[in-house]
Amino acid sequence: MSNVLLINVSGEDQPGVTNVVTEALTRFGVTLLDIGQAVIHDQLNMGILVLVPSNASIDDVTSEVLNALDRLNMQGIFLPISNERYENWVSLQGKPRHIVTLLARNLEASHLAAVTKVTAQQGLNIDKIVRLSGRITLGHSDSVGQACVELSARGKPKSADDLRQLLLKLAGEQNIDIAYQEDNIFRRSRQLVVFDMDSTLIDAEVIDELADEAGVGEQVAAITEAAMRGEVDFKQSFVERLALLEGLSESVLDTVAKRLRLNDGAEYLLKSLKQLGFKTAIVSGGFTFFARHLQKRLGVDYIYANELDVAKGVLTGKVLGEIIDGQRKAEIVVEISNQLGLSLEQVITVGDGANDLPMLNIAGLGVAFRAKPLVKASAKQAISNVGLDGILYLLGYSDKDIVNLHKDTVV
Image (cartoon, rainbow, N blue to C red; front, side):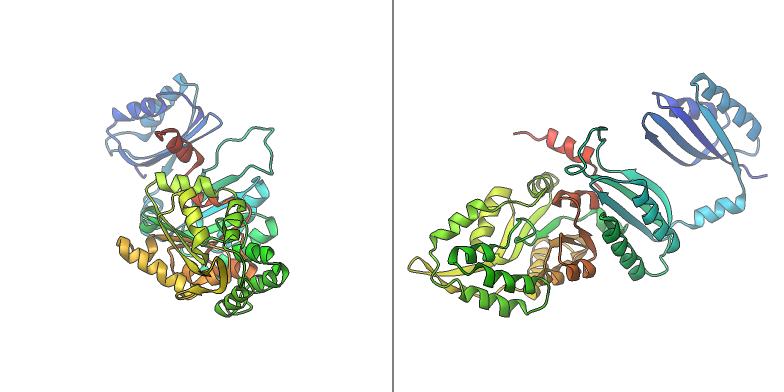
């Protein structure tokens, strides 16, 4: 008979449970092989896997632990584990591990059922589920709330590409966000977050706002939309749009900057990232005037954007220097990474348009935020239903972590 014993403890959570159980085990000289616990709504569930010495009786161990649990008004279930089953469990060490993050305004059982059905069909075994979002009141508003659970899974999917596509399709059908990442050392060592600006950090395309001021709004907006969908070359469309702004007063730039609004969660995310020690950058196909405005407001470390050419107080319809298109964005990400001594696996990039895809695809974590269909389908990760601060969940931070972080900030 195997000397490996799995002990499952359950009941109302209270101080000292672990101490009482392990004290009961101590007299038998057992070896601790594994332990884990979770508390949901004040109900504790704890599992302890132990190796009982050959000179001790499993029946005696069971009786001793049950007596200890009885004093706490808790229950215990005891399961002897065969040597073969134990060795199979040990052999799983080193198997690929994955993180599936499920985000929604309001999380329903059907969402989790659908996600876990896909992961199971792909051969992944979920061994841990953690709620990252905070507790909600029964009267909360679904429209402003957000919920997140993180699933830790092991195994090798039958097809990583198929798994991503199935989760992407599911996210669209259920109006939720699902992120799938490899759980490796880089996930916990990322240090740089690079943002696109227009329609990512802010809820507008600045060039469209300038076009409205110039009276060519509809014409420019149509070209912008086609460019962001990847239907036309970015540089070509950029030159065409710029030319339509020729003669616009420079004073309009400040007017537009003052009315720009940040996207949901942007300010909270940037503040949190700064306190967590991340470096941040804006790499934009927009304009430096507005990037500097955001840099001052959000405390961004680096900005790269196009410099508008101004002569005699009006826009010339051109920019100074090289136009920052998608390829140039990726090159800049590499340059900043090298400057900071980081690998690209330690970089997070966030964008919404087709010209963001090159930088989204080279980063360790590339997030398409409220992106066009082409971009969402091509990026590694996508967030569409919650704010930018949902990125904190993808990094593994809980609401409690971040609330405590801000609480400890000295103003």
